Image (cartoon, rainbow, N blue to C red; front, side, top):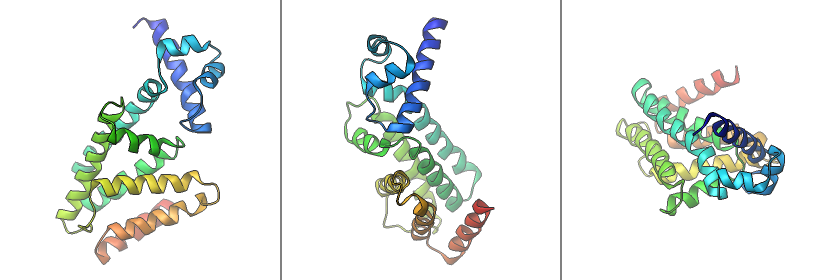
Length: 197
């Protein structure tokens, strides 16, 4: 790709990122083009569909979260790796309103441009959960699909103005429900205290 074309594409992605952060994943392509000060045809030349645009915008983040899971798996205790990854996922999903609905749909749709990245992300979380379960640090009656659903639920809370102030507290409730031992719940309390300092 030529340097000027890459610059134009990056500009469109930056504008789209801001628009989606403000209005959610359903923001119109026409609005994104208007904000970028280009014609709709120019936007569509780079990204022929909304899904192509979202794929370009979100895939890097999905891949980074997947890589983060791998890093946490080798550098942190099982329960700490799981909780840190879960917190990072929730924080990221609250940046883009409505993205969790898109992710859930992409997991089920093998034709979706986002399918592979979403499946890899869910699998990364499942590995962290299985590792914590094997160490006796997480309840065994949940799986990667449940964990993915919890991310979506916690992100949804962050999207609701009336409930956003409760999001951190409810994350802590979910964390305590996932972790099994008193020692782990004490560690969760210490993490909460550090996060508030």
